[in-house]
Length: 133
Image (tube, rainbow, N blue to C red; front, side, top):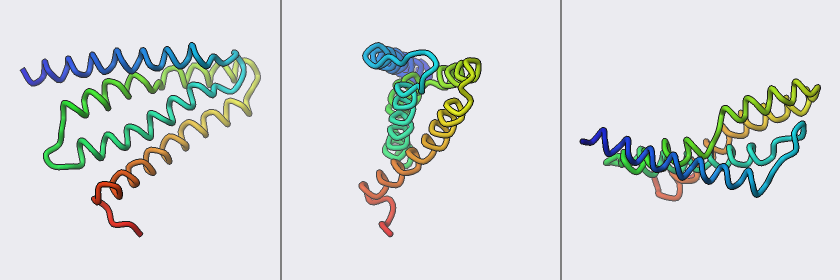
């Protein structure tokens, strides 16, 4: 029963997250061969939010697995998109835009890690799990 509940919250969250990503791509379209700002923004915001969700729902006792499954795996897992990132990077290379592709890959990977780390640290400070330096 617990596995079925977890599956259900992930499925509902995934539907919401993918719908949110689709809406943003419609509202903020990016021309082919140009820097994919919409996907980058979505992935960086998602990276920051997953850091917050991890701290709020898994780092605390007791961990809130259903809430984390809904928000982290469901909504944010579907909202962020590795497959779009890789296809956009490959398309930039195919269109002879290696510097743009390189900048996009670095901004996505390094930026994603940095914003996730920063959001986790700030969240821990905000809820007093980590002492400020």
